[in-house]
Amino acid sequence: MLLVTSKEMQALDRMAMDEFCIPSIVLMENAGRGVAELILEDFKDRLSSGVVIIAGPGNNGGDGFVIARRLDEIGVKVKVLTLCETEKFSGDAAVNYRIVRAVGVPVKECHDADALNAERRSLDSAGVIVDAIFGTGLNRGLSGVFAEAVELANASSAPVVSVDMPSGLSGDTGYPLGPVIKAEMTVTMALPKLGQVIYPGINYTGRLKVIDIGVPRAAFDRVGIMAELLDVDRASKTLRPRHPQGHKGTFGHMMVIAGSRGKSGAGVLSAFGALRVGAGLVTVACPAGVQPVIAGMLIEAMTEGLPENSSGEVAFEALDVIKPMLANKKAAVIGPGLGLCREARDLMRDVIKTVPVPMVVDADAITAIGLDHACLADAKGLRVITPHPGEAARLLGCSGADIEKDRVGNAKRLAETTGAVVVLKGARTVIAESGGRYAINTTGNPGMGSGGMGDVLAGVIGGLVAQGYGPWDAACLGVFIHGYAGDRLAQSGAFGYLASELASQIPAVLSEL
Image (cartoon, rainbow, N blue to C red):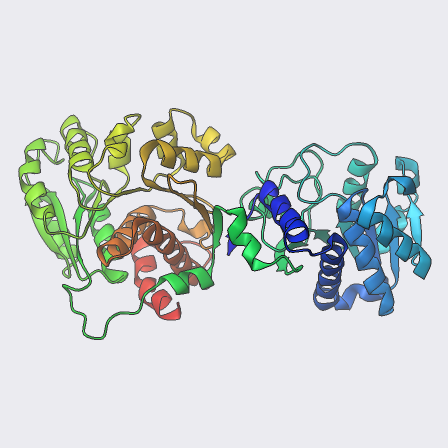
């Protein structure tokens, strides 16, 4: 599903009106009708207590007037609280304001805190409160009567339905601009907005519903929308069926360069992820000292022992073994548990930069790169990097807190400077590429916050690349599948499941998709 910023949504509205000749009042009517229908569907057991609609001065308030009229038409008790003087309504909002007054819907003007506080009992006793104060385009904090209205709505025991966007929430960052509505459900128009599907915006949006208001699909392509929300529909369309005459050679040979003394499990889990997602063959290249351990833990994979140093990490001369082995591989994963001694760092940097095979760069390999973005930007082959926030911070020379403040912006910046497809892991993983395209994943849960999960993910993405998926599709599909597998496990236990157990769920996920 496509995902829009506030500016992109404004451009879609303008295009619908100017180039597709759809009157703005028709869009408003469609929006109000769609919200009213969802209120009737989702809150029918509360409607006997009535609906209070809080209307702001712009088009969001106009949507609220349409909702009021629609609910009133079928006998729902409705009351509208307006937060500005009548003369401040203009355009379509003014038209719909006059209609609700004409049909007799009760309207109470609440231009100041005293007038609004006089309606506290109405809000407390309402079956549903509709937040139609401000929509997607808000770029400043709420104050005065608008802030007071937010506080009163949040204090009520009634569920709040926000129209298009919880008032006070940034549609682009997901951060509160000041006081913000905490909605039980948000009904947004045409497409989901970025701030609704990333944290902390998710916490204010509640259940997100998207309604069609009549913006032509042709407008979506012409606006040049750069983002998408990864969902089941997107994943199922990306996943390709297996050829009935395929064999292990058909589905690619992937190499994992991973593991060291005390960290042999990382290589095993990456190989496990690749095999579970359908790679035909997997070879784990690891320090010779841990080769027997890895070979014994995963009998379906092949192994190759590499020269190692006294600390049990890979020695630099292992390049003479690794490079010839990579020559006939379809993909590689490098970094999980490989170590951070000087030799290991130098080896990883050399492989990342000089080997033309498509490669997933993970864990210790990301740390080895550090601020030297040229290692990726000048690489001979396509690269996917999979940093968690701390690793992304090392790549960008900032703090993990800085990364979390703008996950989308930082993922895009990292993709632009490295030329790689970036998978910024975390709650609502962000995938970005250098051309500006990005995606937000919808699967996954807090139970996945345990060791080894990232190793499995690297293997899943690499296994998809080995089967012929491009880096972008492999990253998007791999992240979605990985999170979906975790969600399956969370159904029987919110946390405490293992990375190896998650990998074992992947075939069932593939079957569902």
